[in-house]
Length: 180
Image (cartoon, rainbow, N blue to C red; front, side, top):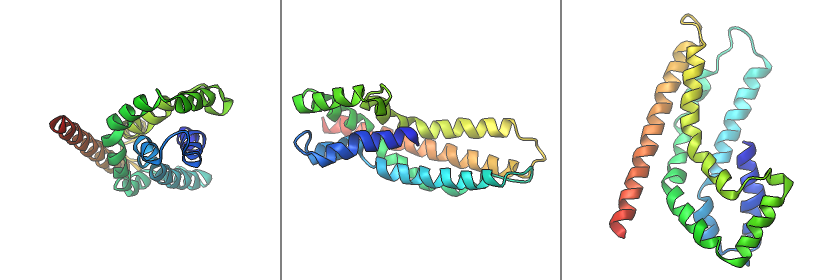
């Protein structure tokens, strides 16, 4: 969440506000649907936070991941566009105004010494991390725990989301190769 907020607040919004740095079509190509990804993750974080406030041994969280899994398919567009976004960014980095902007952002403490590329890759890594998190939760959840079935269902759904995203990315790569 922090990385998404930094990416949007420190890079996307300033670039949108000043088209002299970068044209709107380039900004859109680089950032894709990152703001929607932030909204989905904000909802998940809020829901998890509410559960944590009243945590007990009977509390469950697997159902939250089950409910959110269909919405996490929003990552498909971002991941499928990532190679194109990276290529656009590389080309834009050669423009003096953009190079100066990126240098200024890199040196800004709010960006924590990270480049725009470092922030842009994080959504690509998020779904696989959810899969790993769910695996670890299952591994540390007793077989008789009330949350175990929901966690297993969430893992299954999250793995399917990851597979679908990967398949869509391969399709996007193949379409790009054919168009060359």
